[in-house]
Structures are given as C-alpha cells and as structure tokens.
Length: 372
Image 1 (cartoon, helix red, strand yellow):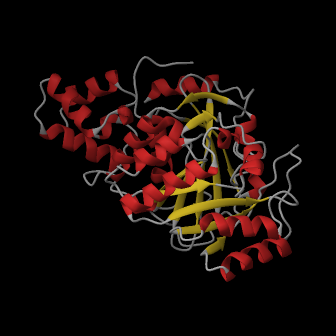
Image 2 (image 1 turned 180 degrees about the vertical axis):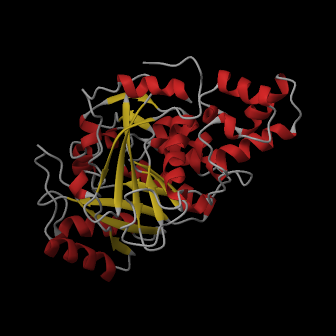
C-alpha cells in the first residue's frame, strides 16, 4: 500500500516555511502550523483554527498528518509498558515501545524496517532488513504516544500504576534497526523533536544506540546537539564479538574504541556501553576482565542487560548470580555500571525482542491513511 501524499512530519521547519512561501502564505504561517503539529499535537488539519480555511484544505490535499496506522497495541500485565505495532503506507510494519517510570516516560523508537546488522541473539536482526524509515515515520512514533500521554484519562487507563503522565520525557533509538545506517533521516527527526518552537525535547534526553558503525560515531561527534551515544558492545574481544555483532568484522574493537575516544575528546560526553549478558557465552569472569581492560581510562558507563529471551533462540539470559558477580567485578575495577530493569517481557517489548510482523494483514489499516 502507498499514498501519494507525503507526511507533513517529513518537513523540517525550513522546508515547511519554504512550502508555505511557495503557496503565497506569509512567513508567520509556518510558525502557526509548526505549533499545531508539535505543541497542540492535532490529528486533523481542520483543527488548525487560526489558519484560513483555504490553507487548511490545501494542507490536507498535499500532506497526511499521520504516516503510521496502529494495527495493534499490547499492554504489559503491570501496565508499565505498552508496545504498538504500526503499519506504514507501503504495508510494512514497525514496533514502538512506551515505558512508564516514576518520573520518566521513555519511548523506544525504530529507525528501520527490520535490521541488516545480523546479530544472532536479536529478533529484529533475524527478520532481516527491508528499508529505512523516513524522518516523518520516525517522528510520528513519538507523536502517537505524545498524543496518548496528553489525554486527560483515556478510557480503560484509570488503573495506571502511577499518576497519569502528560508528556514524553525521553527518547531512545533502541528499537528496530541501526540508527547510524539511517543517519541523515534519524538526525532530521532529532532536530525536529528538539526544536524549541515545537516539541522541545531536550537533546540530553535522547540516546542514539549503535552496534558500532564508526563513520556514524565520528559524524555524531560533530553534531552541536548534546544527544547521548550508546554502543551495543556485548563482547570485549574481537573473536567473540565477530560472532555476536558481525559488523565487528568491518569495524573491529580497536577501530571502534579509537572512534569512541575521538567522540569523547570532541564532546566531553560519557559513552554508555550496552552489554547483554548471555548464559555461558559472555558472562564469565574472564569476559568481565576483558571488558575492564577495554574500558580502562575511557569516560564510560556500562549498562548490563540480562538478555531478553527470543522464541526459538538458543541464547539464554545469564543467571542472577552471574549477573551480580559480573557487575561487582566492574565496580571493583572502578567502572560505573548499572543493571537494566527488564520491562515488558510478557508482551515481547524488551531489548532485542522487537521484530517485523510478517504476514499481518495491514491493508485495511494502511488504507485508513487517507482519512487524515
């Protein structure tokens, strides 16, 4: 399925301004439209009531407001986590996860349909790569849940475990896909989300996670926005990492760490290293010692992730005892470490569990795109 109308979320502020100028509109109209999109979060061009009726009609004829259609949503048993399956205009699907905390509302968003990195323990990687998401498809994932959070009390949500939050506080590019392999569109989306005239999400509340695409890390070091960088490491020696993270064969650890050090030198920012603990594979004392050697004198924080199980996968999470021991080894070596709280396992919303839903009938959902 496809639509002839592009998403208005694909436009940067400058592109929106240029479009409206070409239509003969005064410059201030761009600011008005931008605020309707990213402050008021409207889902209908006709709701932009301070615009002339003719302009609202022209916008509706030229653009769609939502390039995603919700196929289904799963809610964890404790209601802290929600996972949405979205249909794209071409019939492909992606997943997005909202995680509620006492003080944070974190969105884990996707940057690609599938993933081409081939990590054998990750459900997304097992599904293969189809295409990059557009900037508008990335932004729209955030807008969907921003609208939901802004509702006064949606039906059926009165029993949330905390007082109803009102806005997205954090965005992590840790969903489907490798963000650095879709760099330009990911960063266009980031600039839209951080624009102070609109959504105004603080750059430090955004994290881009990569398996180690060195050119992307070096580009990110040049970005003025203080977005956080995370490296999906999972092994601290090349032989094992070649197996767990195949891109390591192209960008081995010595090259990756040179890029990380250059990133730190230019930005002064700490880098998070994500390490999924897999029973009997990368969770032994010698693996912890190798990680300590790798990160010695690096401005780093290690986020240990007990592996989230994937149906049919031989990879299993480490025991609690081995996880505690591994973390203690790092702490005793002076390396800051946390063990990530596992969320949404009962709805397969944890890290490494997102996948394309091949075979889902999304035709009717995609056709609804014409309604907005």
